[in-house]
Length: 414
Image 1 (cartoon, rainbow, N blue to C red):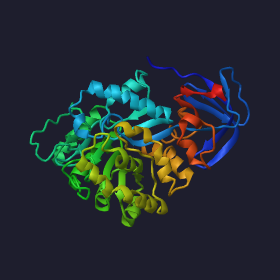
Image 2 (cartoon, rainbow, N blue to C red):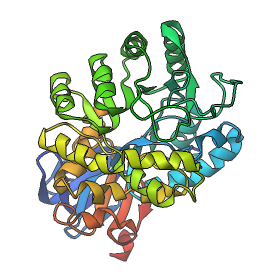
Image 3 (spheres, one colour):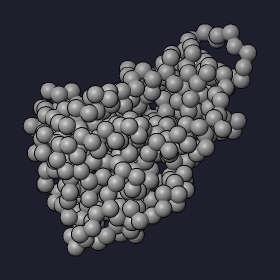
Image 4 (cartoon, rainbow, N blue to C red):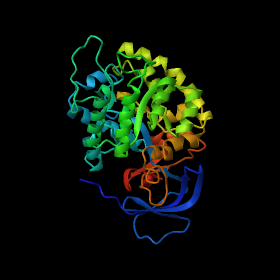
């Protein structure tokens, strides 16, 4: 059922060079076998389908570096009691929505597995390219432990549903990391601080010992895959960076010393500000327990301050949304929130070239360049001048291609 890409030509395209932050006008972009074969100012010899963009923007498909495609509810505990077949059916709707919004690659931060990724790759499900970690690794009582304080039983195994796996001690962490790698994980996810959606930890707690974090990082390095670390406080962030993780997820309570350490280590920050505003507005209606909803406000306002610190300090950032349940529809809201602090090109880079580098797919994803995958968007507007065109796909997004295949095509209407 794999969908084969067509050979095609875009003419009169205004190509967005996300690295330079400028447009290349009047370009011809030829796609062959799912890749960008040629970009030039002169029409190449080509006898296939041609699409005259009439000066409209041709830009890379978007990347979201922090999603939960199987989070069909804002109550993570319910996911462990929900049949995987039902979760997959609901996830299919979430994935289609992401692709229609222009996201051609997403990195799951806990819950998705090789089966979902394979179904998308084979064309059984329609969705963005899915990078997955399997289960996020958590200590007992950590952010991946969804048991209430009064629960004593633990049904935790590698085949269980849910987004987290509990492992304690270096040996257990190492084995758990190896198991997720065995199942094809494209990255590992570690919970190294308290979180909002976990019932028994505190936001300001640190989680996993340094040796446990280093053990997971060693296993990821051996497999040549990156490590993403959930962390809020400066203390948790610095512990993780010093142990060698590749990215800090959220980082709402970072400080200037963290900014300096990001530079020293060359690592990436993935803010996820849209989820806190969404949870504040809709979390209770989406199933989030009341006591956990109250924790949202411990990090809500701090997130924008952290973004300002990181932006002023020149920290490399990637785009993340981290939305849950019915709130996935607010995925493009991250553009508006970051636009309060950052110029448009920086946010676009976060969702393209920066994310691709974090995924270790530089040159393959996140750029319109010869040899890159033909993940392309046609935009009827100027996203460098008006971020609003990125947030209204129904009006401005005229085409979405993944690997050279049209997933959405309204070019005939132009």
